[in-house]
Length: 230
Image (cartoon, rainbow, N blue to C red):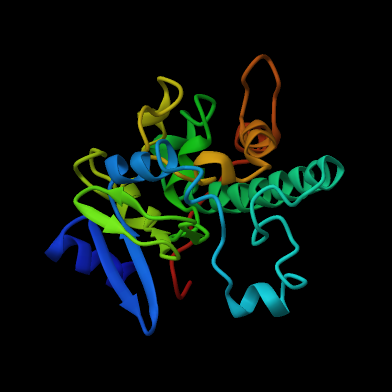
């Protein structure tokens, strides 16, 4: 789906207002439009659409990911932060150990920052949002009740923002945080993943003197690629 939406945006523009059946859907595939959605329109897009998955798989929209805005207690938020941060970190480690052996030139640079792995393989579409009132994004008037889909896959592979975007290049992140809204592994705005800070911290290799899991593995284990069929 994210690839098909990316093709549509490449043909018709980075912001599209479509209909999925009876539902109005705003597709966003540019960092500038993402910034509009999660800064001046952040409170408007703070809610989640009422999807059937939220009803049957998320306890009638009561989990933090699909609940309405400000319906969660601080204690519950703390618990979810731990779960969300740990889960995203585990996925990051999996991708790190998949990509690094296939990119020997990058193996020695992993101590700079493993955040590249998070940016290269996040969820292709951010969790959907829904507008609580009318607003404007780009040239579009967005009616109340419109579902917002951010195509992070398209943004993370856009040559306007990234040099050789399909290549695994950890060195592109050596300068620290990425400016703008070009890297969205945890979403943005007030509905950003509550485990973002924990996820980033546990995904680091050796900042502030802390040696983390991936750093230890690539430092002490030698990898050789084995060809298919051998």
